[in-house]
Image (cartoon, rainbow, N blue to C red; front, side, top):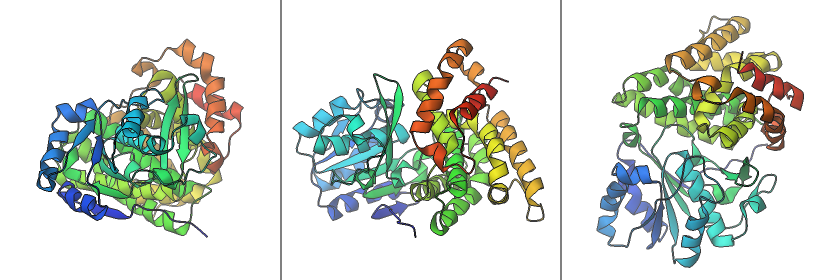
Length: 385
């Protein structure tokens, strides 16, 4: 049996942002707080939200100090803003980091405490401020998940927080908001979405519902990732990627992520690598490690992504999958850790700590082939071969 959790309201397609007034009216919200980042302000996205909300004649206040790869300290001011204000909803505008920040702000602004109080394995299900998520990247799927990730400043550990409290009440999935994304962000977020779909499908927590969402996501992401990277104005590719990312979010929210994500979070915490990019660095090596324990499932992924054909047996399909993952990283100019500027000596000094943090997150335990700490260390080392 699977327990399925979804946003109550989902508006999907071109112009979905225009439905925000209707959503706020449905939620009886008269004092929303927009939680976003400075880039969304500079690029005019916040003004677009203000324009959409103008007919409601309600005050529109903004907290725009979220940061990439959010930390406990980076959300403190937002939490205090909510605790001191009389807000009745949060509009989370941006990529995964602003939405993740908004989720934590919505919960901690209502209930207080320290982010560690909310970390997995605790299930956080208390009522929080309702969240309306407006994603501007096709990647994290955070608009449709019950997860948020916030780093602990003291330990540099990325903490996974889980529960119904973090699930947005509404998601406005408007691919037109992604048309101006730069190629680098398109690549990193797109590979993140692909990883979500693959891991949801091969996870030990997979179920018939999550399987269908994951396969549908891969069928959209596979043929559109490269297109969106090479031509950001390709509306068909952008739409496919946006819907694929949301479906991948639905898939892993109702299944799980696995080893790639478990290993990715410590790289991001220690070396400030964007989450999607660290996933991309890891995906080929972790997939090769995992295939022996889920060959048929990975072969399904290869076919759904379009990397293998219906006539390919599982062995051929998986060889084509591995070749395609390497090829995508090359075509989308995914840097190696060295190319990114990570110091090799420092990386090797903390690799055992990263392995322990990866295991502590719980995600590696969902992998079809469950590693021990030594195997995770070996996988980290392989990124430098």
